Length: 180
Image (cartoon, rainbow, N blue to C red; front, side, top):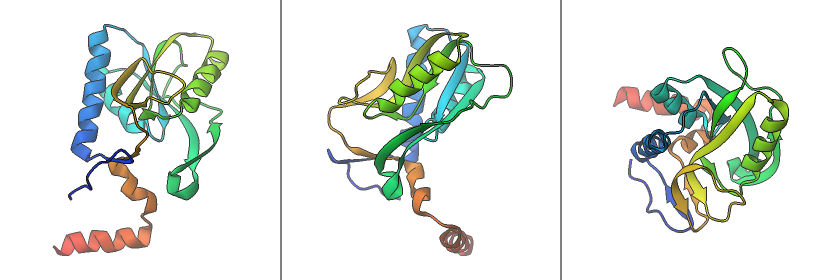
C-alpha cells in the first residue's frame, strides 16, 4: 500500500518506518549507557514500543493505561485519565524505570504520569523517558527521542487503520484477501 505524501500538517508512517524508529530508540538507549531495571509503557501508543524494547533488553514490561485522545476517532485531546493500577507479571515498579510512549505532543500526559508515578511508587529511584516523536511545542523534553518535530503534524501511525474498522468491514476484508 502506498502512503500519502507527508506534509507539515500530516506525517504518514509505514510499518517498516515505524519499526525502524523503535529500533533507533532502542539503540539510543543502549548507547547512552544508562542501565535500567524495568520498562513501563503507556498504553495504547507506547505498547508496541515497550514490547519491542522489553524483548531487546530482556527487561520486565509493565503497562499503564492513559487516555486523552478519545473524541473525533482519537484525533482530539480531552481530559487525561490515568489508570489506577499498573499491570505487570510480578513485583512492583521500583529501581530505575524506562518510561516509554510513542510521542510527546503537548507534554501534559508525560508530566502528569511522572508526577503520579513519583507519588504512588516510592521504590522508584529514577525514571527516564523515551519516545519516537518529540514535538517542539511540548512543555517537557523526553530523555530519549528519535525525531524532533518543529511543526505539529498529525502522525498517522500504521495501526490507526484499525481505529475506524468494525468487525463487519473486517469480515469483508478478510474474505477478499482469502479469495485473491
